[in-house]
Image 1 (cartoon, rainbow over the protein chains, first blue to last red):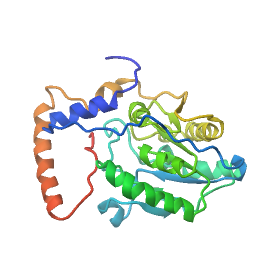
Image 2: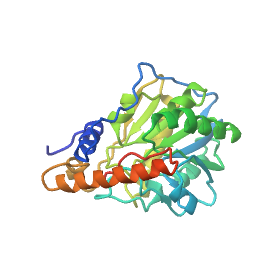
Image 3: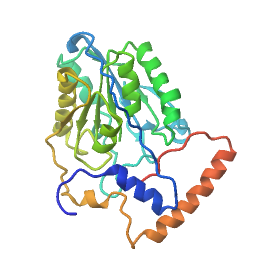
Image 4: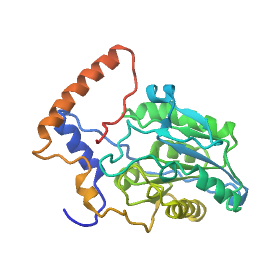
Length: 158
Length: 129
């Protein structure tokens, strides 16, 4: 199919699993209703938190899939992304700004668009198990957001 | 990540997702989503294109501020520099790789059995490449 079209990732993934001999299709989360929180105050007064699916590029981050909180300053040089399903045949993740925009958010805060970037960003593992995400990781990320007094969050899955 | 976003929204924290898998995010249902029509891996812009990256981040911030209700999707106006071939190539299955994928699946299942036996309770999605 040539030209521009939205890639059907769910169907492609189902076919990819089947080709590897898995008989049961992955079932993506689906909901009838979607929660929506309005801004609690003007954006220029908000502290922003950043959440990524990339893991810290450390011995622990490379070997253990879990939620991590890492410092935004200094900006990390790299993140561990090997286990994620990004399109390795056509691109790379060597430029942090292309998937973890810490520096761009910092400069945007300096311009007065929002109050500040939180001192920590969080890694949330992409999980086969929705249960791990819903029962363990999401509550842990919320806890961290509260500890860091985050008003709004930007989430960037690879 | 969509599930994390929903959990934060349910607990009063407004969120915006920047991503490149439109169908997956919209199937789950999130409050605010900025779609970058790029290969998976660089939702915030082309590697090396700082101005493009800043543009995407600023647009996501604007979406955070301006969305009036759940399920608000905006698209960035940027196109992938390398043409459109990547769309057909993602997780492609055809006669050229069918046998390789079958063997890869067998190997992965053996690894999964070993991981489970060692007490591992977490597994990533299958990586595309």
